[in-house]
Image (cartoon, rainbow, N blue to C red; front, top):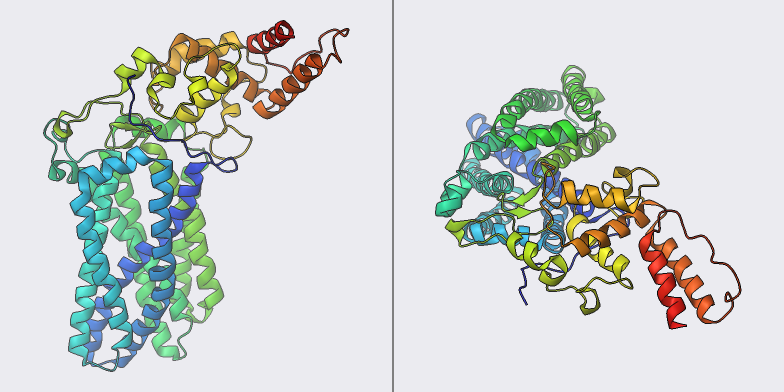
Amino acid sequence: MELISLFPTWFEPMVGSGWVVGFIATFHVLASHTSVGAALLFAYLSWRAYKEDNNDYLDFVKKFGLFLLVFTYVAGSLTGVGIWYSTTVASPNGIGALIHSFVWKWATEWVFFVIEVVGIYMIVYLVGKVDKKTHMKISVIFGMASLATMVIIVGILSFMMVPGKEAWFEQGGYLLGFYGDNTFIQMAMRMAFMMTMTAVVGGIVVATIKDAAFKKEMARKLGWLGIIATLIGAALFQLYLHTVPSYALLVMENRLPDYFYPSIMIVLAITLAYFIMTMIQPRTLISGVAGFMAIVILVAGLWPEETARESMRKPWVAGQYVYSNQVIGRDVPGMDIQSQLPIIEKVGILQAHPFTPEHLREVNDSNRIQAGEFITMTYCSNCHSVSDSGIRPLHRYFPEGVTQEVMERYIRGAIVPGTIAYMPKMPMLESEIQAISAYLVMNNDGGLAANQAAIAKEVAQREAGKLAQQPAQPYPKGTTGLVVSMKSSAEENK
């Protein structure tokens, strides 16, 4: 038996595995980006404190540092573990691709992260206990370590979109996979936006300053930091779009909602207006307002940005060789990786998947819907929900009352050959096409559970003899061929 390296599918019925990862990742990005931006800000303020012999700057660093200890290095670290867990079960081959390519990069990042954790404690608890010059040196080391973690992670994130150099596919090596135009532009863009986040979150700390003059000074510093960083970040985003593959732009044009660009512009305008307001009237900077703006940045700013980045990678999830449904869809000679598509085309996904239940490896009249459900979960559920809620529900993509024949033509013409640019190529045998089509038709017209319940009830009644003299009841709309075969099979068994 020819098997491929696929794992059991993580099915989250309410929102979908993609949104679970997205929820965790969005909060983590806010926390982690704020920590890096704050680390650079701490180095600057510690230098100012040393140069001007000003204790107010160190007091601000201490207050902001205490906030970061809870907000970033507790909540942020927990969500970091959450990302590892959720992405590993949702996308095991995707995570495997990153680890196999960048295991030592990741190990290096963890070393810098340890320096970060030790550094934030030293920065907070050594204020007033060491001289300003020593504190400045600690802050600079902390800032450099934080920046190093960001550089490494951004390089890995860029690889998820596209390897640094095309030569990586033939030659391998982490340098060719890591460094490219997308890496450096994204790095600069994220540095800009992380300073925006630092300015917003820092406003929560500024709101607690009682000295009116110092509060005004820090509000102006953070205001200018936020304004300049926001404008630079917006400009770099436009440059970033020139470094992504052409299909990524196609995804943006076709898959992102119409309100995406207007919503981003509105968030940018609100953010700039907020900074201008706090600079002109520092008294308006209170903890409630600053906290609300942090939530606005999280929900209205980061969420669309992270959603767009995830969507633009489609149909790939890592390195342009691991499909979003975990199938290896491309040869990578430089990493000794072979495409799994030929095996699937030869024996079918049910035979190739190592975790296919034994009773589903061969499609027949009695298991067709179950086989179709398994194929749908394997091929589609990482990007689509099969329920009414969640991420991109499948029923939205097909008209009500779609027939089995129409569904099969669509599967053969679009899904199997991979003619849709932002969807993976999904080879299937003819029996598997019929199975997935039957399942999608039933799921589209009211859901599998309701149909199965109705079928099971009638089969049980017929077996008990209760309906022996009654005409067959109409089956739920859309339950074609298979339902008839199940009915016939039950009557034959009787």
